[in-house]
Length: 217
Image (cartoon, rainbow, N blue to C red; front, side, top):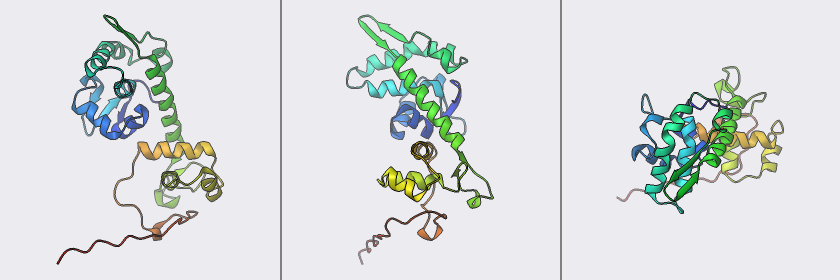
C-alpha cells in the first residue's frame, strides 16, 4: 500500500477519499485540508494519510456544521503530522478521537476506510503493466493482452461482469473491479480512440453515431 507520507495525485485522492475530483480540488482551493498535507509542485498532490480527512469532511456534512468539521480536522492535523513517518498498521493503532467541548468525533473509521482503499489502489497499480512489445505500450492487465482502459470502459458503459468475462476469459471478477479503480485513478487524456484503433480482443457493442449539429447560416 502507498505509505502514509506518499503524495498522491488528485485523481488518486478522489478514488481513495471516495469523493469527486471537484470536491478534492475544492478541499485544496478552500484550504479545507491543511496546507502541510498538500503540494503544488509540478501539479496538485495530497498526503496519502490525509485522504481520510477529506472523506470525513464531505461524509459528515449532513450531521456537522462546516465549522465543526474544520475544527476536527485542525485538531487532528498535528497528530497526523507526527504520524506521517509511521506505517499504516501503526497509524491505525493511534487514538483518533477528537473532542471539542460537548462534541466527540472518532476519525478512526475514516482512517481505516482510507487504508483499505489505498490497498486497492496499490493492488491495481501492480496489476497493470506496459511494454513496447505488447500493444505498442498500451497499459494492459499483467499476464494478458487486455487493455485495462477497455475493461473499465465496458464497466462504465453498464455491461455486466458476466459479459465482460465472456469477452476477456483471462480475467476474473477481481481484476475487473481493480481495472475500474486503476482507470479512475489514472484517467486517460485526449480524445477516445476511434473504432478502427480498437485493440485485439475488443468487441464493438454499438456503433451508433450522432450527427453534428449544423451551424446556422
